[in-house]
Image (cartoon, rainbow, N blue to C red; front, side, top):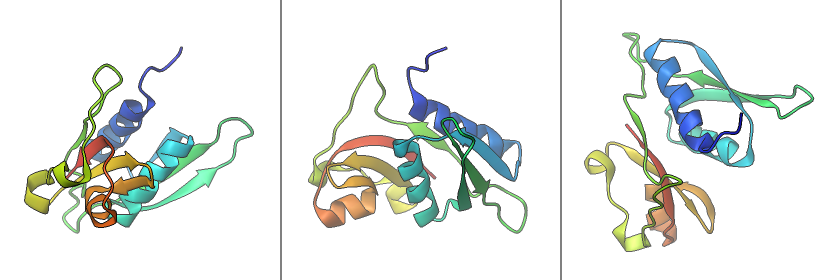
Length: 132
């Protein structure tokens, strides 16, 4: 079965695993998903990740992060730009997520970046998702 939106599948797997309090979640690997995972690690929404070679596509095993009380660090994940409706922001028009408490992940000419880094590097792009 072909998948029309692999980024939405990536976000849904993480969202479902964090709500079910799973320690890890396995996701089929691709370059964009690997870059998204690196941004999630850099922004401290996950504790770590490893790449698993299986002789086919490969997997990304993401280790989810929880607070001392056992609540997920990831409260919500939402897809912004979708295959049916693409959205783009100029560098000076990138909105703040929850007044700076959340993070928007964008794909830009300089790679996959958080909203803070995109503003700092003065580049706009397509917002993939918001997370808080």
